[in-house]
Image (cartoon, rainbow, N blue to C red; front, side):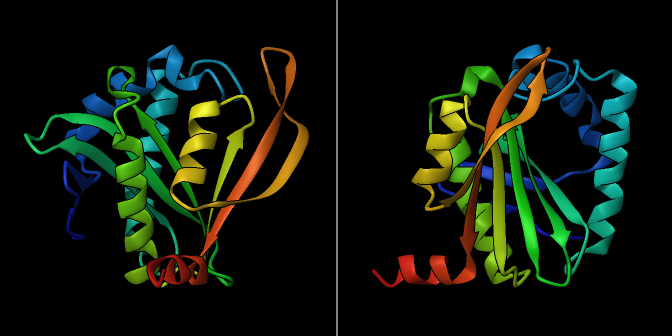
Length: 184
């Protein structure tokens, strides 16, 4: 079993079966999906993703992925962060996160993402981490920049939400980017 990650204000705890009710409540909120494709997921679809995340954690460290439950120091669950392997050969992973709206704007997502990136590069020996973000999601775009990710692409009309096309931005961080930022 992997250990939790600790930051100044947060605990990033690996997903467990007992986290199901929190994950269901988090991903049942329409505002969480405002920048994503498709309809609000059903409880069954959320459960499928939850079970898949539990299975993928068994493939670590070279493949698979991990979901962390983001908690405050008093163990209150406030969000979820995931790292998923896109290409095991090149060690390219993808970062995603969702935070309960009442905790937006407090720096929690940034703090969690920085801890997860450090862990991915140091422990998993990941080469590259991507974040693929709806260009209209200004908070996530700002977060990617704040944690040192570099915009690599702007994909025009790459996703459809409720019949309307939206652009995507692709941000990335290489292991060498993190090493370089630490040496400054």
